[in-house]
Image (cartoon, rainbow, N blue to C red; front, top):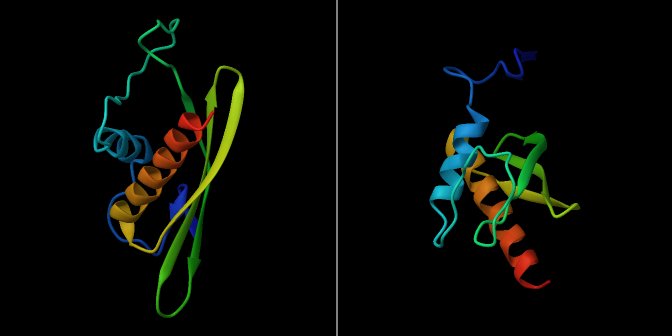
Length: 111
């Protein structure tokens, strides 16, 4: 059932996980942006590394649920988050990323 890193039951193009994640950050209300920078953070920039651990596709006759695990790394601390969506395709994955990003921000604000 798996072919080239994605399920063969999807027709069309392969999902671009990185681009979808970037869009999820850009749609957040606030001063958040995605930058490919491996330099030293400044006082005004907090560097966060995000790793997509896995996506679990739970399918049944009436709906498809995506569970997405992401690990956020900041200042040597790892925060593992799980986000879900029951929307299909790229839009559902973007919802998962947005949900995880908001969970991360809330977690950091409570510390």
